[in-house]
Length: 585
Image (cartoon, rainbow, N blue to C red; front, top):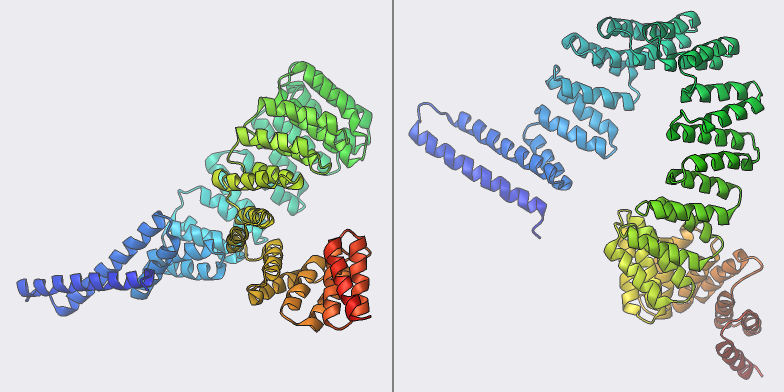
């Protein structure tokens, strides 16, 4: 067979012949200047360069398997090439073989210890592997080599902190601060490290420095207040909130913090009034108001309060912003939590009308329609979704399922096939389920070969698709074909779900078709046991058939009678009962 390994072999022969031909020619031309050892080394270098170039080309074209094979071959040619080691390390990292990736990157760094890029990759991977001291050592070495790269000081500080060396982390940030001046990111980290060292005064002094540098920015006053509130110093917290209020009383973060302050001090009425005041204010942007409202809803849910308290706030917002579709979406979700499905549906419909290209609105209506088995609504919203967003697979799936439920089998089959053709289905498990539905519908419609072909495609995408394994194996047994394959597939299902009565019934029936009547009885009885008080007519009919083959004629008749009472095929069951009675007068 001519596969990619064969291709590599021929590439190898081609480059080797080319190199040797060139070498022989050169020897004839400059015999005194070129030795056989020199030409051999040159040939090997050319061969390596060729395959490394091919590997990078395959990688660029996303032919990753081919790239990996070529890189392994390059490694066999020269195991000391840092470029190859880094590329292999990168591949193994993506493949989640972290230790192997670390080995290759570490070797690359040992061969090229001053390479900034290699060291940064090794540091990142070492951090993932929790090799804290290694991370410190790498960043410390890099900072000595590249003192102008200020970002290394920040990384080194983080590495020291992760390693529990908090004072060293602070020292690095102090050094960074001398170059960059006081910045929010550095200040907040110093606050965190001082707090971890339980040096509270130094911690809060760090925030004071940034406040002094930015006296007209309310954000830092609010931050200081929040930190004092977290530290259970509410009086000092309120002092800084007041200072922020003097700068900008409508600052959204300040309002949130004050609401949080009131909540922590069990002053819920003041929290509500603060929020209502902010939402009715004309000086605040709608996004800030929505942020506040979302926060308030979270408080209501956390305290298990009546969510209808928020409805008046929504009404106020709708009066101010009647065409804000995001508000419709949020209010729809709140109404769903209040179990007001009709009101929620109206809000989601408004959202769809304004945002027809966003699947979220359609999906929320599907969530309402599914539990109530409202097939008309389900069909209408999914059809609308397909019209506006034809690449979304979930709309085809639910539309197909709704038609399947209503007995519109040809239409359901058409929809599922259309989904495979037009939707963007990146998830192989979902694509497998599409083929599963096509298989079930095709078999029901008498197109057995199409059904089996669809099941095969479904299993190629998801070999553990249990419903497919069950249905495929059961239908094969009904056709009395490929029974060994059917038993193998059904066996997977009962190992995965040993108490599933449907899967046990299928396995028992396949054993029956194979003539293993005693084993079939064991599994069909398990199926009935796990069915509880409501075994299906089909299972009971199978049980009767199996009992009959085991010579238990009277018990077989009992099960067929029960199956008939539960709505089984009366004519077929009566025929079986009559046959038994005739043979046992």
